[in-house]
Image 1 (cartoon, rainbow over the protein chains, first blue to last red):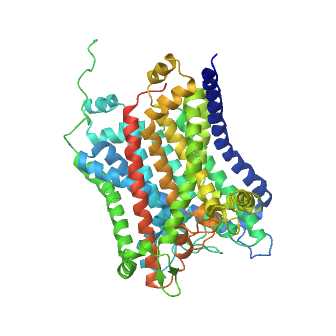
Image 2: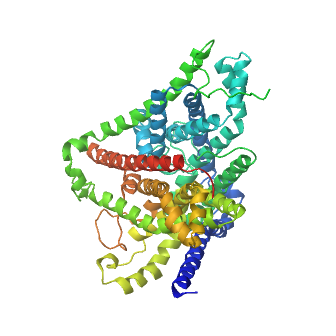
Image 3: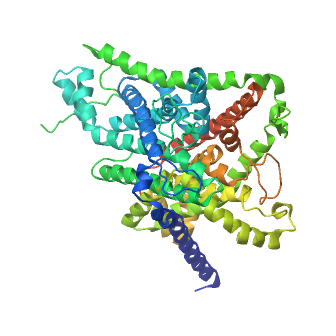
Length: 282
Length: 320
């Protein structure tokens, strides 16, 4: 073997091994994150953590029950607004839209999807918090729904587009009207994929912090209505992690573990449903 | 019998609405139009709330480095600088790592391993940013303060980029955590682009005696370069708009320093920290103005990413 070929083979081996190392280094960060959260967070998980209100610094036995419930409220509001709008808009994009209007809606959905989450927060502050003169769970929910709408719309569109033409033609040939075809054949056929997209979308907004900072704000106590400031898991993690107190840091670790477990569980569940038959949209 | 449906396929099956179809069209159209309306309202509201700052400072806002809520004087430069610098540092690390990993996943790994690793990468993309911030505060920042920072300083301290005191928080810490948050996007989109390169491109190169690496680096990667570039822009857009993790490790000081070890600030971080407490019309409108700048920056980068990705996925065919 000539010297030049030796060098080529050596370069080949080194570079190919390097790409493998990069792949495993990047993937291993997931396990590092999981292990670190488990190591630091698990010891603070106890019944009090899930059932009590936050304790002041220095007192033991506090929990984040209000933040868990608050997060659930905010995400529920976001889902109730975001899923129907996104779903119907997705049907429009896939089944009804003409060229120009379809392009306009599709493009703005992508644009909205790319808006930094902190800017969404400013917008929700402007349209909800400022006119209503107060931070509220409602404002937080609306902020998160603005992120959920474009995700749901584009996912729904992609899964509906994936339904074979023959199914549409079959229904239409049997004399069904177009909306009947959509409601009884196309949407049910794409049901699984659409559900998957929705679960992934809801999981994504559940971990969002920035849009909640000046919409839902936070609360040391239970909120009594949806128009009051409301605690949420991500904001509690942020506030506790940036506080100077060790016992609050512990709470932040535990809250982080809970949040990550919920988000990853939703992702794994959704993606394994996908693997059983449907292709994930890109 | 054999002459099955060979009619040319029109793009949409039925163009003639009948029965309740007009109603269905109208209802779904309203929801589609709602997305358009909300986005338009978002731009309008940002523009409106930024009004006082725009009128007072004009374009000078972008070039002033003064940020003083006490004297009510505001300039965007330290934040734009911090945002661009941290995103650049992030890409400097995540592009080689991400593209390298994508090459492994698309060209070398057996299909099963590749799918499993890609699944994990997608989970990594789903980790909320506040979790990255939490981990960075308690691991990266102390490490930076006690070992990485001083080591960099002792070797490269003579350059302006690694001078000054080491606090742990700062541009470099933010760039590092952003790199971890951007490579999942770079990996999964680049992998798609590489897998869309036709198989015969690889076979032709190998048949001519190229090594696997030469075929990959000189033939396959250039073929997929637009898609890879798209994935980089996608990562960049994410890095520019990223809020929580950066806010937790950047140090939050509105200054412009050449040293990567010193504290800084980004647009998203200053909004996150100061907006809720911003008293005074001019103060909050200056923050909204910053939001508007960030918004414009990210939509331009995102649009570029979308175009590049659309171009490559159209061109390619199947896995090699």
